[in-house]
Length: 314
Ligand SMILES: NC(=O)c1ccc[n+]([C@@H]2O[C@H](COP(=O)([O-])OP(=O)(O)OC[C@H]3O[C@@H](n4cnc5c(N)ncnc54)[C@H](O)[C@@H]3O)[C@@H](O)[C@H]2O)c1
Image (cartoon, rainbow, N blue to C red; front, side, top):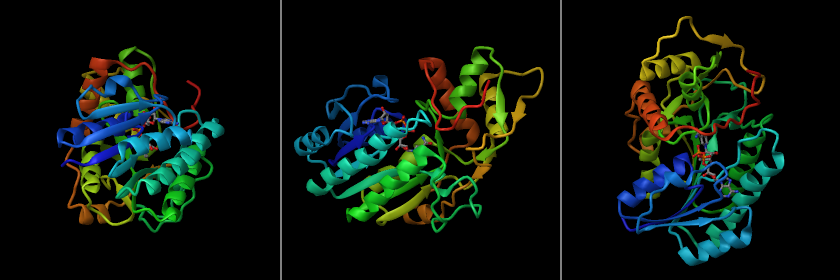
């Protein structure tokens, strides 16, 4: 596969795994990243990989990179989410940045733009479980979800051939946001832990990349898809799986706390149309996926973790 793929946010968790996969398949990759949450160490130097440092909120930077690289496919993975009160940063990166990427993609006549949307677009109180693609969109009251949803709507309005993947909670090596890296950090530093009384559908990153790779190669129809397992686990189960991976036994059960008011009880996405159109099903168990993530944290450490939720006091 000799495709030229431009990946915004390609130094991040999902973007870097996709870059690895496409490079392994013989493709050429250009990463645009400002390293806000991405890590340079996520991308080993390779002959067909280029990295341009800059923000997608800067239209001239984006246009210049598109004109030089002339991508066939754009995978737009850059996003801002790390501070729930940073509305300006969320709007600049997620809304304005996306508009810049869409306009540059139209000008470069790319074959397809692939976007990743948060399942928080369905709101904190989904009206069905599992959530189907017909579920109403209700991103408030979350700045990340509001700005990601505006971006998704600009993409759909632009007329560009696109796929938007609404994702379950992705986890695995290089993931530094969400509960798993936090559990690892606290457990390995003998700090007290608690879990929220909520449930999530966890998708292992390589299973997710299997779908995205097929989308880069042309599978799927313009529009929205879910990437999810269709099964949810409690955060407590995730915590206990992390304990198993670390071979830790606690003296007393972990404290379960009421979730914050910006947290949803469960978000379970229906993956049926993805399974059908991409001939795909996830292959990694929670235990195997958590073990792979823990192995990564043990080798590379965690310096920072991020969440788009308002943090509860410790
Ligand atoms: N991880 C998940 O569970 C999940 C779920 C739903 C949606 N998503 C979406 O998937 C995409 C990838 O997320 P991720 O988990 O890999 O997060 P990540 O933080 O690892 O990756 C995001 C990347 O974007 C870069 N970035 C941020 N602002 C930028 C800017 N202004 N210009 C250029 N680069 C910028 C960051 O440095 C980082 O490398 C995001 O669009 C996110 O909204 C992720």
